[in-house]
Length: 337
Ligand code: VTB
Ligand code: MG
Ligand code: MG
Picture 1: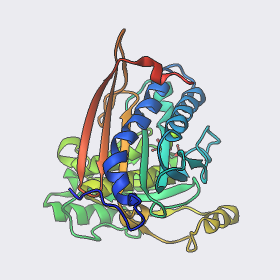
Picture 2 (picture 1 turned 120 degrees about the horizontal axis):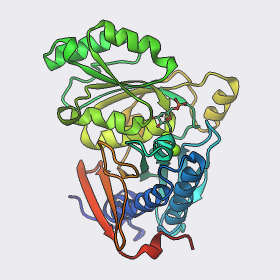
Picture 3 (picture 1 turned 135 degrees about the horizontal axis):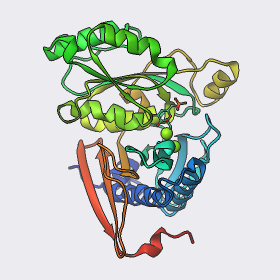
């Protein structure tokens, strides 16, 4: 554990501040977003659930002693409620930090009370998370313990599966690949199956999907392949950085408008492949709270006296993963002021 140090100016260095003090604060932020969304669980109204999570997350972020900027966030692609990219959050009295958010990841899962919706955010020193529009992103991810560069977006799915199987010491038929169930993935799915590998399809939730590769012994997921949201990619990369694993991504900037927007945010090479460290550099903390029950996290439980939440917090500086089961008795904190 490093110590909290003071710089010459007597200011708490941003990295230490984020690591040591804000770790628990982030838990509160995602807990509250999750509870707000969970009240609308299973009601069939995606927008209302998303809006509730966004409002709660914004409110809690603005209470933190940070000078934060949202650098990537979900919502633009489907015109959903959102924390805007470029939005300043926090009370401005603390360190400059970058924030990546998906206040409700898996809005459809929440609206249908299906497994796997979460409230998730990442925070890092200013300038260290990818600043990009909410576009699609190609992703490939595997867990820790493999040689660097084993899989690559520019290799075919067959090549990637075969390389992974060889490195794992198994036949390709013993590999399971997690893929979002979308028509755009028909070719990838067919290619993976041609190797004999299994394809596990998910309807939503590729932040957790990527994270599952890091604990393949428990989840059975060896590799994640496919195209999902860019904010989800940054959030997953930030978490994977804390626990090990490899990930490669590429933004899909397929219109002049998207390329211009990305360029204005500093993305000068639209075809660039980003590694985990290029998506989330420096010291980063990621917090996710379950909204509906899922393999990563239990959902919110509403009791007569107690609201229960489960949160996982990842911290890159030490690789510590904390699971926090909270019993909330003061329900007023979940109400909008
Ligand atoms: C994925 C998935 C998300 O968006 O990132 C997906 O993991 C990508 O967009 O849970 P499409 O739905 O358009 O394919 C979500 O489904 C929702 O954020
Ligand atoms: Mg999402
Ligand atoms: Mg969302």
